[in-house]
Image (cartoon, rainbow, N blue to C red):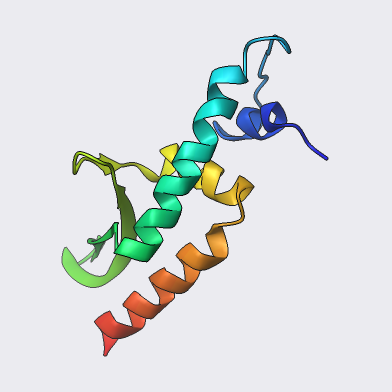
Length: 112
């Protein structure tokens, strides 16, 4: 089983080194993750993800060809939480399938 430190090292991207002190470095992260996971779970239940449409422009014609549908998590005070700040936790706590289902359902509604 991989430690949370190994996942934390992956979050910034490939070809990087993450140094950790096994006694204290990951403790605040590990303590915060269950609360973050609960926030994600609550957002799934309470429609706490907000949709964003990002236009995709044809560079040759400067015309919007399509849109990319994105999801953002709302924080407790209404602020938008960037995906990089919650997707790692969602993956570690097995919440990605539920997020994916929500995104697909809403994308189908948008297209319909």
